[in-house]
Image 1 (cartoon, helix red, strand yellow):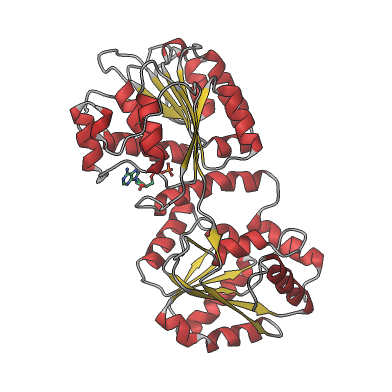
Image 2 (tube, helix red, strand yellow):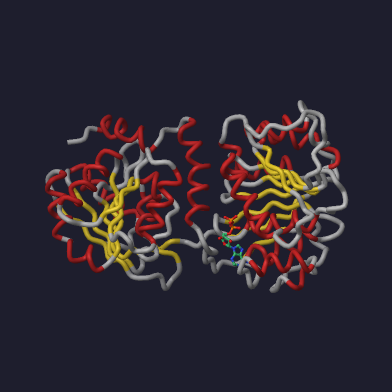
Length: 434
Ligand code: ADP
């Protein structure tokens, strides 16, 4: 039986507290998302545009051709398999490419085409004949900077004269010899060093400044201040672009502080619903009993793909082992795995190599569960205080879109406490009943 304090203790190693561990997770989560995503996230919401100058005409494009890009850049875009701009790109691209230049704050969930959009803007912006750094792009981590760089390199494949450098720790440069690369992308600390200490970049010559993943950035110790310091070195008339996956007050406050006269583009995340999901609970005594109940669902597990959520790493490990002993093909996502390993596990599961994925909350955030038709809450989702975590419940089980695929959710109830939690969840989503 779990006491309240036990719940909290069990939670800390995997779920992270409110300390730095949790904050680093945001960057990891973002990287994981990028590693497992191969296409745009569907979003049928309308884009909201708030113009810096409400009297100027509002441009949006339906094709890449309308942007009048350099032919070799357009070729690069098509070569990536992009046929038409994504929702957010329809508005963001013409704004970013407009003359005279305009500043932009853009928010949309990950996977909606932000990175591709500002990569295109940077490639289009630089004049390759000018052999100095013209675009600076700041990202929260080394790995995320590399991801962006890969997009730029791919998109700029037919623009070989445009050069790119990575301002990341360990990338040593000759001091005081100015870089000739047109685009520099990196983490805030190293970019700041390159501008000030090593004088590799003249910040006054930067004409486009991109701040990616602003929400992750401001959550990371030091990154926020370093970004502001870089920003201060720039000319007032440098074009400023800021991107974020979320739109909390703290992000907007920061955004409006660093981006003067911004145009603001937002694409709200599609709401998840429980409409098409049949939900059940199973009364059990302890974990062995829950395991037996799970094995009795075996029929379902073989016809469909299932995700099973546990509260702790330890429980997830135990459950995966037990299922394997029973002869199931099971994948385990666990917090101690490196992010690349986690991406590989998710990839295999997505390709149907394993039918069952056992995971904890932290590991599975952001995983698209479209093809999963059974979700099992082996442990019910609770917050740090041990109360029902309705939001996580919805993320685990809900589907986006009114015509989302049907599915089943099975909740294991193993104590009076968890009965109470399932009741809280039921009350919260009052339209559902178990
Ligand atoms: P974000 O930065 O918002 O997370 P990305 O720019 O990384 O989104 O795009 C998500 C995925 O969609 C990537 O795999 C990317 O290659 C792809 N993508 C981006 N723009 C388009 C487009 N216009 N058409 C098709 N695929 C696109």
